[in-house]
Amino acid sequence: MPQVLFGLLSVTRVPVDPMGYTPVNTGICGQGKAHLSQAQATVQLPVDALLGTRFSQDEVHKICEVFKLKLLHEKYDPSGDVTIDDIRVKHWEEAMQETGTTEPHHDLAVECYYLWKNTRLQLLTIPGPVQAMLENLRRTHKLLLLTNGVAQTQREKIKAVHCEGLFHAMVVGGEHPEEKPALSIFHHCFGLLGVRPQDCVMVGDSLDTDILGGVNAGVRATVWINSNGRDVPPGASVRPDYTIETILELPIILSTLQ
Image (cartoon, rainbow, N blue to C red):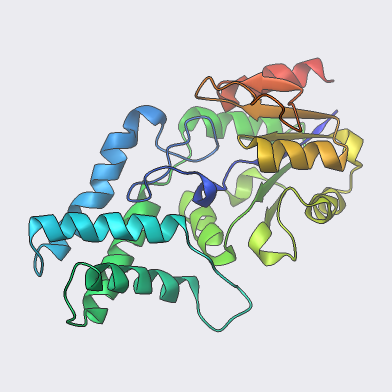
């Protein structure tokens, strides 16, 4: 019976509007694609209101746009003395300064960051059907969550959705020398589960990290969650063994691999 590696919590890497929570209706966590606008508004409105106490509406818009760009191009060295929180407070502070004002706004930047961060975390959920599916699979399979990203950020997301009890093990790439698709982190996962690569199925929504990593690691099968109806790019270095539109289709695939 194949064991399952999930690579579906790497939401910090997905290029969507960072003012709202990444909508992953195909993954483990998320608000669902249909709720994207609502989720973004839930995050944006309180931040806009806070910034509006010091800036005009046009300035607020510019500040948020600059912050988005800084977040998307963020570089973070976990071995340094600066935390990810420090870096993102600085994003807000610099975004305010780049609107043309030279007045320091450190305290406001701190407020904006933690309001933005905490509101996003509150939006994280595991939909009921997905949770039920994971609970059922856990009875017959070993489940492991493998996510790339900054350790603190990803651990906060895991804690927010209370998903620890759904998996036999969890691995955060930022806590290891290499992340997906590196072979070393997959070997670490196999060791945690006490299984061979050929006993495992890799499930994820990224061809470049989840599927490529699974193929290179020699897993039994790879399952690509393709919610947007995308085609595998021509000339792609890797192709999934199976493609599904939602994670809820996974049990059907696993039943064929018994």
